[in-house]
Image (cartoon, rainbow, N blue to C red; front, side, top):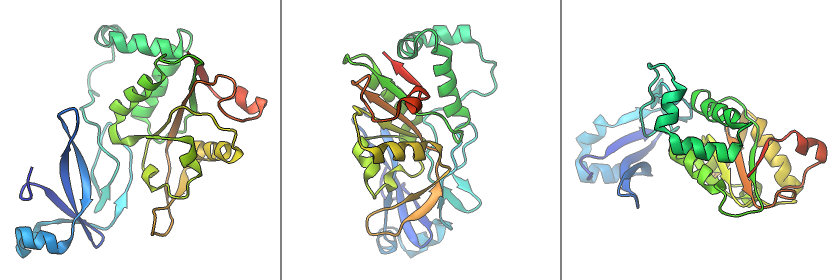
Length: 254
């Protein structure tokens, strides 16, 4: 990709370049970079500016099965998945078990035999109904190297930029614009007795709206459909919460 083949858009009054950034895995990922009108004009000519697609503003509409980047002259910042989903063929669990042998082994290890199908339902809902509210999922184990982090990497691979890693401390940070439009917040190595952290978790896991703030900019309200997954090596003390509420939280002890 070069300057001539890059895609340029204007959202509101600001221009952006959509470019393919190389990754460590020898592939690329599409990112959006602010790009000045003057630079585009100098590099590609004033006439090129007339060809640039224009949008009123950004929106975030999650949809994995029938994704649209452009919705009524608004630019959808929710990322499309990196693969096509077959919605035509009939689902056959026996064929899936053969094709996804090691995936099923790992999911059974994470959720256990009794709750294996609950784990499948969780992933299926994420894929088919991304705006549906789901409980906070906590993977806890005193032992290390049990597959907790691998499961988060598995979800990150499936949902790409729509899943992001974070830490417990960032929930108390005022600047949270990087979480806007995310389907999954993946919180590793969680251990907190901060009541504000607990309250923020409860709010984010059920709210359909949230306020987002970036440094140097005013806070803005937007739709929220984020799901939270946390991992911890502290089975009985990973979070400070009342026993009654704790019993209602799904936990999968590996």
